[in-house]
Image 1: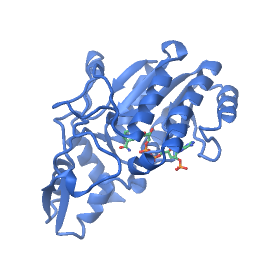
Image 2: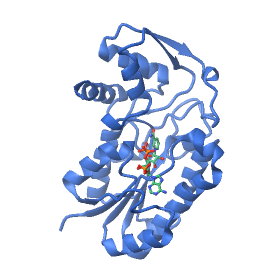
Image 3: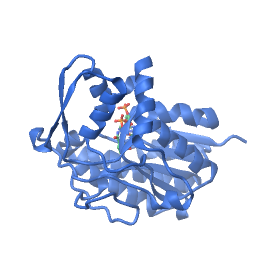
Length: 286
Ligand SMILES: NC(=O)c1ccc[n+]([C@@H]2O[C@H](COP(=O)([O-])OP(=O)(O)OC[C@H]3O[C@@H](n4cnc5c(N)ncnc54)[C@H](OP(=O)(O)O)[C@@H]3O)[C@@H](O)[C@H]2O)c1
């Protein structure tokens, strides 16, 4: 029998790449927010119980960090309590849950990559809400849970409104671009996340994993330079400090992640520059 999966938040940027990958291998159900609002506990429990799913892949979240900082109640309600609703429903229905969390849960004070052994210490409301979601997931379901912390996502093709999509479009017309050089993370291709989720489902894996692409901690400046090289664009990339673009929500200075758990399984994600190169080729064909 085919594995049956419910995907929440499947219409977002990560879902744009993850849904087609999972749908090729498994039977998937992908409700919109209006069909399955994760804050509607009763409907969440009914849907997951009646659906006889093997897995719920829980992507749904409020993801605009600066908006979240001003809307604490809504953010906690969707990202933390909504996740708890999914967790409780999975326990009632006896199905597994995979929760997508973020490298942003750390304080940013470390000088290098965070691993699964490091302790989260969120410094903004979004990160706090995602970490509360992690705690809800790991508290139940007798170990039948998966928490995947992803890095700085790029991907989504036509749905890409994030950094790489913006820079890609800007490089066609600008002759100078400023990019922040003093905040570091792990660039992470959403297609690679989708392919890893397939492996986790096939192996019935459980636990906490960091899943970003490999490579040294990278800044937005490093990413912009890489995009310029792929495009052979005639544009100057100017490194600037994050102070130049003040934001409502504080960002950790360091949120690069790597996985000691994936290494133990013999899985090494490819370098972010290789993944980014593939994605740029894809954007060029759109
Ligand atoms: N993007 C990143 O760099 C990044 C990094 C780390 C972790 N993540 C995590 O990855 C996951 C997916 O992120 P993304 O970038 O794809 O975000 P996104 O583009 O903002 O998509 C989020 C999705 O969640 C849905 N949603 C929001 N509130 C909901 C609710 N109350 N009930 C049901 N669905 C709801 C949205 O529905 P609508 O389509 O109706 O708006 C949308 O489809 C999130 O859990 C996020 O925290 C993202």
